[in-house]
Image (cartoon, rainbow, N blue to C red):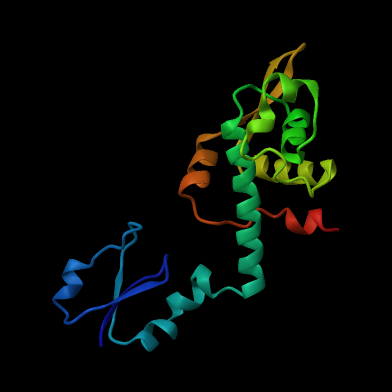
Length: 175
């Protein structure tokens, strides 16, 4: 039986005949689907071997883990109603108590304390990696107020619809 396969989602649809191929040109994710006579043809294809889904399991798990942690951080940044520098931002992620957290009721954020198992040094490594990937940026406000973190458009896209990517911080964090 023939199939239409989305390599991005690793999803396949059985089709009754080749005419159905014309109806299933693109997947729900928006990627172009490809026609295969048999599933084995796809599984043995070069495209499958170079597709992100065929990387070793541990590498895929690391990518998924780093992406999940990054999304928690980006979601926290999105929830915060005030401008904050990195140090205060890390206090929120760690779930620490402080006067500014109480004043702005930041303890009510859904992401408050979600990364309390990380040290300040580890969070700094992760946040620096997220900045390097262009998902957050630091903006200099003034000499008195210093710099604050800001979510970029690239970060908003990654948070909502972007693919999981290797951020590169896990090996640095677990040393």
